Each structure stands twice: as structure tokens, then as C-alpha cells.
Length: 151
Image (spheres, rainbow, N blue to C red):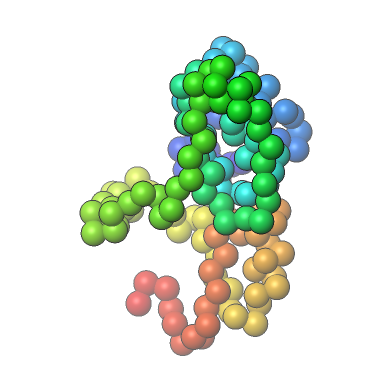
């Protein structure tokens, strides 16, 4: 949660300790959020991302997952005019967005390296294990051990 704050989060919620939808509604005076992005692929998180939306809100589910969600099209979508959308590659244009992200990084506005942890390929099981509790947000496997990040 500290890392989220360091990277710019104004509020953080640990859904292990409290109901995320209730906390979001409390933080937004009962309205909910305009946008929600799920990167987990966890069924409850995906469903909660929809329930936490304000009227007209959009939830983007972008995780590659075998999990499914159940939703009531009338109550979850129609009543409050909510949208659930899929996103592939962030709907980005690499020729524009990668240089922009590099510029943000150089300006200190995009500290993505705080989320990365490098593992040798033989540490693949450790990388997977570390990603589950958040010890590694973005585990990166190094296949060529002569490789050095930034070279």
C-alpha cells in the first residue's frame, strides 16, 4: 500500500481488511468511481470493479484469466448506465505512447521501475510465488543471464 501512495495513489484500500466497494462508495460520498481497471483477473475483484462504478462509469477488465464474472445486465449495467469493456494493449499506439512514457519516466513522473523485480529463469517458481502476495508487482524473467537492465 505504501508503494501505491509513492506512485501517486490518493487513497488505498486493502480488500482483505475491508469491503472494497463499500470503501470506494464511502470515499466518493456514495457515488462510486467513473473508471475502474482490473488487472488481477480475480472474479470478485472484476465484479467489484463494476459494483464500485458511479452512474455512467466504465470498468476495464484487462487481465488474461480463465475466470469468469456473473453480472445482472439490468442491475449491474442498465440501471446506472455502466459499461464493461475489454482492453488489449491499453488501446495504445506504440509509436506515440512509448516515447511519451519514456519522457514521463525521465521527468520522474512514471516510476515503473519500482514495480519491477528481476529473476533468473531458474527462479521462475520464486517469481510466481512472489507475485501472489505482491512481493513482486511485475516479476521479469531473465533468460539470458548476461543481460543487464538498462544496457
